Length: 214
Image (cartoon, rainbow, N blue to C red; front, side):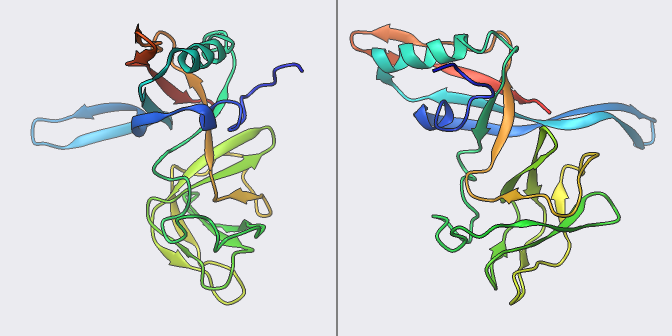
């Protein structure tokens, strides 16, 4: 069977034994300031999610398989989906059973281009600051973070709430929203992969970095 890109969660992320992760933002800003403490900021490009992943000790065979999958990405040529291990499910629904198979979609966009509302949620479902979501629009994927806690009404619709970062061009009402195992489309940062060191049957110290690909 031919390998397909970007790597799906079962083809890569689910195979990783992560011991630690740093999940953050790379801003692309130009700053200038004055002697009295004033600072001006110009956003040259939208911020990108970045991650530093450290893998747990594993048997050499497992490490070889992960290394082979990473090499098959051909550097930064191909992409993969990776979730934030701290945000696999919404905080108020830690195993995803409350949401179940509900079909969540974008109900409306805020006028500030940094807020959104959902419908299709179970009545009373809560989204908490820091929850993540994935939204496909065209052939691209947005990876967004909830910026304020909201609760859906009895019909499963939320009020408009803030998200980070700003909504990209092409966003519209009706798009499907993934709240369970939301993933960011990423590239392995060139030169960042360390396959680890083998000692006896165990490989330790494997690490890599990722950066969002839009």
